[in-house]
Image (tube, rainbow, N blue to C red; front, side):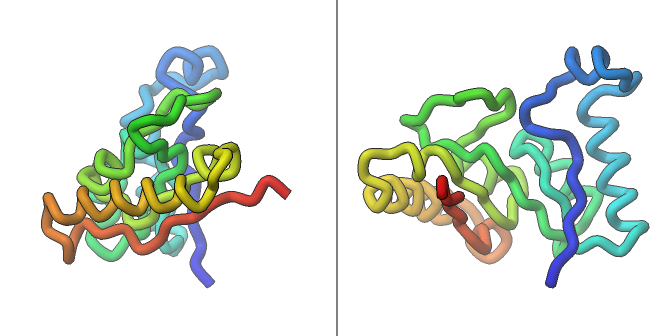
Length: 143
């Protein structure tokens, strides 16, 4: 079993963080939460793909960086503010990608998974595969 902390929800940004009482920006809060996760013995964090590089830098090479809100290049953002492509997440240090609605809302989930897997393979081929290949692709069930 692995224990993960959560940095900042992907539906939040600097503006609405201030509206709910935070006096620091997203990057500062992410770094703080990664350090708290490390101090508490967590194995990693769930973090926006846009803050994955911070989590990777602070957490180190073996720290899990799980990035939700992954959308293939052709998908809409839905209600998420901090979406990104598989390539962007991988290039920024994601160890795991979470892909939900682009699969579950697709008319052809198998084709959606194949397209996302292709984007992942392309991203890995462009970088150092040993350090940038995500460990998993996850489809969230709508049931």
